[in-house]
Image (cartoon, rainbow, N blue to C red; front, side, top):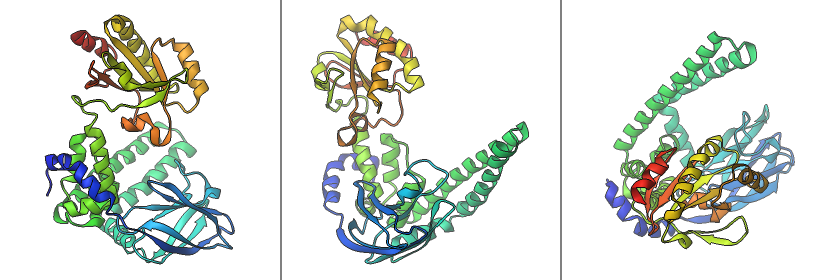
Length: 383
């Protein structure tokens, strides 16, 4: 079993090994989706996004795809006619693994959702589903979910009474308790089966760690190194661990280039010699806007002492971003984050906003997520 130090220290070597370890091959994927007719179908990979778009023929389809067959990643079969891939009460997609050739998918459309009947040939998927169903917590969750749906309907569609509200909250708390029980149950499975790829996949889906160095390293340390090298989801966590480790206090902040509000390129390293608050925010984020007066106050107090604020917005609407800049009168450096592979917020693992990193004059991270008056108080100890 690996310890935390060996995971972090061996990151680069193992990453080089795993990058060449995957096996991609052309596989025949066919099947029938009753009710789809001749509508469009998409197949998505969790890393590459859409890898195939085609139309069914009278409910049937047959395609050949280059896919990875040995790392237990979930591929997605999506019907755009049922809705986008996002939060919804409906299910416009199904998920499958590929470990054999061919794969046969049998499904149907019911009440606006895509329902899986059988997936023949996907032994890894069948093992995953079987293992999950055997968990004691799974049956409890199914029962509690039915109770929650009834309580939700009673409060939202029948009567918004205090009694119905308390009943809804009670079922929600019951489900949270079952999730905790499920996590403990899966952890016990890992301990007795550290070499099981199926259990590694199950754990990564249902007991994924917080995105901190300690949490990710502790999670990965439970598995045999061979499984870590093979599992798609554990390798993804390894990559995240490497990125998160680079963002710890004391580390050199990753450099990047981005277009400023005047469309001129700005590099983080351009600010070497100054203390910099790298601040991620958005115009639509209420907490971000409420935090800005504190950031402005710190800027005004310390701008003469080699201090700069580099505000990176994750807005998708440039007009809304510029409107917020005019409204809040923020007198520092601004940029709008690029999307896709060049995303600065992805580089800095930004999962929620506001998020900030305070860098010293050498570009090292010396503090993170300073809020309110904490920013000015901390700067006073440094400048």
